[in-house]
Length: 154
Image (cartoon, rainbow, N blue to C red):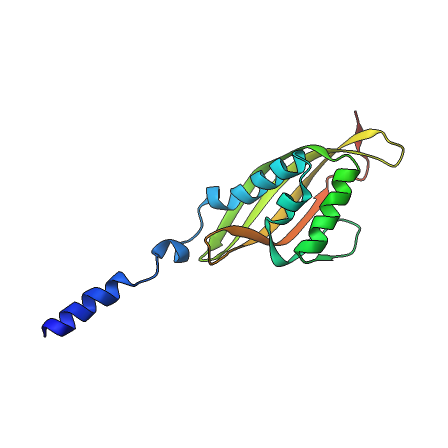
């Protein structure tokens, strides 16, 4: 009997942390895009790409699908090389269950067009996020679209 009680106590101490199975908080889901904006504003494509899962898909408007973290880093480096700056995000909605979540929001950024003029792009985005074994949320699917094809020149 004592052995059974001891075994029960031992097994209860080995249970996985409940946090990993808990539903995500809005703050957890919003953090990825806050860090993303910070990385792009710092001109750090590697840090931006690290916010995506290894096998993530990026679905940019009017372009082919970008597959995998390495290609996502190249994509964002190209944006940085084109002068992307003043990136900001604003969350409209979040939700999720267990280790899967989503964030819907608005973004604004500045970038140089082909003539070299700085333009402001405003649009919306959706991120599907997964919580890794380390507890960190990463984007697995990211899609965005500008509000219009005509942009505001600065």
